[in-house]
Image (cartoon, rainbow, N blue to C red; front, top):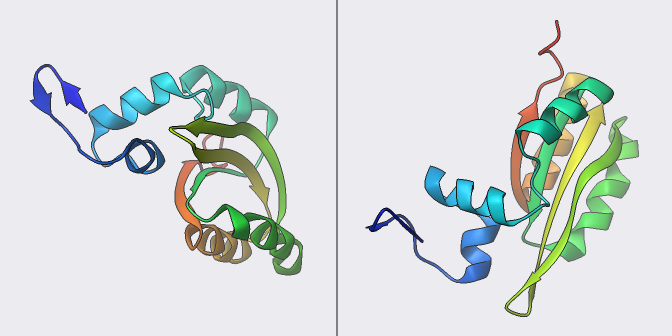
Length: 130
Protein backbone atom coordinates (compact mmCIF):
# COMPACT_ATOMS: atom_id res chain seq x y z
CA UNK A 1 0.00 0.00 0.00
CA UNK A 2 1.40 3.37 -1.06
CA UNK A 3 0.38 6.82 0.11
CA UNK A 4 1.93 9.94 -1.37
CA UNK A 5 4.71 7.80 -2.84
CA UNK A 6 5.56 6.30 0.58
CA UNK A 7 5.33 2.58 1.23
CA UNK A 8 2.95 2.06 4.16
CA UNK A 9 2.41 -1.66 4.22
CA UNK A 10 2.98 -4.87 2.28
CA UNK A 11 1.21 -8.20 2.22
CA UNK A 12 -1.32 -10.19 0.28
CA UNK A 13 -4.61 -8.49 -0.49
CA UNK A 14 -6.27 -10.63 2.17
CA UNK A 15 -3.61 -9.85 4.80
CA UNK A 16 -3.76 -6.12 4.20
CA UNK A 17 -7.56 -5.93 4.10
CA UNK A 18 -8.09 -8.31 7.04
CA UNK A 19 -5.63 -6.62 9.40
CA UNK A 20 -4.38 -3.21 8.27
CA UNK A 21 -1.41 -2.19 10.43
CA UNK A 22 -0.90 1.42 9.32
CA UNK A 23 -3.51 4.20 9.76
CA UNK A 24 -3.21 5.05 6.05
CA UNK A 25 -3.95 1.44 5.14
CA UNK A 26 -6.91 1.43 7.52
CA UNK A 27 -8.28 4.53 5.76
CA UNK A 28 -7.92 2.80 2.38
CA UNK A 29 -9.66 -0.33 3.60
CA UNK A 30 -12.45 1.69 5.22
CA UNK A 31 -13.01 3.64 2.02
CA UNK A 32 -12.94 0.49 -0.11
CA UNK A 33 -15.06 -1.93 1.91
CA UNK A 34 -18.58 -1.11 2.99
CA UNK A 35 -18.29 -3.80 5.69
CA UNK A 36 -16.46 -1.41 8.00
CA UNK A 37 -18.65 1.31 9.54
CA UNK A 38 -17.65 4.86 8.68
CA UNK A 39 -18.24 7.92 10.88
CA UNK A 40 -21.86 8.45 9.76
CA UNK A 41 -22.59 4.73 10.21
CA UNK A 42 -21.16 4.84 13.73
CA UNK A 43 -23.28 7.85 14.69
CA UNK A 44 -26.40 6.04 13.51
CA UNK A 45 -25.40 2.79 15.23
CA UNK A 46 -24.57 4.50 18.53
CA UNK A 47 -27.91 6.31 18.47
CA UNK A 48 -29.91 3.13 17.96
CA UNK A 49 -27.91 0.46 19.84
CA UNK A 50 -27.11 0.77 23.52
CA UNK A 51 -24.10 -1.09 24.86
CA UNK A 52 -20.76 -1.77 23.30
CA UNK A 53 -20.17 -1.86 19.55
CA UNK A 54 -17.30 -4.00 18.32
CA UNK A 55 -16.11 -4.79 14.82
CA UNK A 56 -14.54 -8.18 14.15
CA UNK A 57 -12.69 -9.14 10.99
CA UNK A 58 -12.58 -12.92 10.90
CA UNK A 59 -9.46 -14.92 10.24
CA UNK A 60 -11.18 -18.23 11.10
CA UNK A 61 -14.70 -18.08 9.70
CA UNK A 62 -15.41 -21.67 10.72
CA UNK A 63 -15.26 -20.68 14.39
CA UNK A 64 -17.64 -17.72 14.12
CA UNK A 65 -20.84 -19.70 14.65
CA UNK A 66 -19.45 -21.47 17.71
CA UNK A 67 -18.29 -18.19 19.27
CA UNK A 68 -21.63 -16.52 18.61
CA UNK A 69 -23.39 -19.56 20.09
CA UNK A 70 -21.27 -19.16 23.23
CA UNK A 71 -22.49 -15.60 23.78
CA UNK A 72 -25.73 -16.83 25.35
CA UNK A 73 -23.79 -19.08 27.74
CA UNK A 74 -21.81 -16.05 28.87
CA UNK A 75 -24.99 -13.99 29.32
CA UNK A 76 -24.16 -11.70 26.40
CA UNK A 77 -26.82 -10.55 23.98
CA UNK A 78 -25.68 -9.50 20.54
CA UNK A 79 -27.01 -8.22 17.26
CA UNK A 80 -25.08 -8.01 13.99
CA UNK A 81 -25.68 -4.38 13.04
CA UNK A 82 -23.25 -3.81 10.17
CA UNK A 83 -20.91 -5.68 7.87
CA UNK A 84 -20.81 -8.59 5.54
CA UNK A 85 -18.61 -10.83 3.43
CA UNK A 86 -16.42 -9.62 0.58
CA UNK A 87 -14.57 -11.95 -1.78
CA UNK A 88 -11.19 -10.58 -2.86
CA UNK A 89 -8.75 -12.54 -5.02
CA UNK A 90 -10.73 -15.72 -4.33
CA UNK A 91 -10.58 -15.35 -0.55
CA UNK A 92 -13.45 -14.22 1.61
CA UNK A 93 -13.06 -11.39 4.05
CA UNK A 94 -15.78 -11.26 6.68
CA UNK A 95 -16.21 -8.16 8.81
CA UNK A 96 -19.12 -7.66 11.17
CA UNK A 97 -20.01 -5.01 13.72
CA UNK A 98 -21.87 -6.36 16.73
CA UNK A 99 -23.96 -4.51 19.30
CA UNK A 100 -23.23 -6.23 22.62
CA UNK A 101 -25.11 -6.09 25.90
CA UNK A 102 -24.40 -7.86 29.15
CA UNK A 103 -22.30 -7.62 32.28
CA UNK A 104 -18.97 -5.92 31.53
CA UNK A 105 -16.89 -8.99 32.49
CA UNK A 106 -19.06 -11.25 30.32
CA UNK A 107 -18.80 -8.89 27.34
CA UNK A 108 -15.01 -8.69 27.82
CA UNK A 109 -14.78 -12.51 27.87
CA UNK A 110 -16.91 -12.71 24.71
CA UNK A 111 -14.63 -10.18 22.99
CA UNK A 112 -11.64 -12.37 23.93
CA UNK A 113 -13.44 -15.33 22.32
CA UNK A 114 -13.92 -13.26 19.15
CA UNK A 115 -10.26 -12.17 19.22
CA UNK A 116 -9.28 -15.85 19.05
CA UNK A 117 -10.85 -16.07 15.58
CA UNK A 118 -10.20 -12.58 14.25
CA UNK A 119 -9.19 -9.00 14.77
CA UNK A 120 -11.51 -7.09 17.13
CA UNK A 121 -11.87 -3.33 17.41
CA UNK A 122 -14.19 -1.72 19.95
CA UNK A 123 -15.86 1.15 18.12
CA UNK A 124 -18.12 2.28 20.97
CA UNK A 125 -18.09 1.48 24.67
CA UNK A 126 -21.74 2.40 25.13
CA UNK A 127 -20.77 5.12 27.60
CA UNK A 128 -20.40 7.97 25.08
CA UNK A 129 -23.85 9.37 25.82
CA UNK A 130 -23.31 9.27 29.60
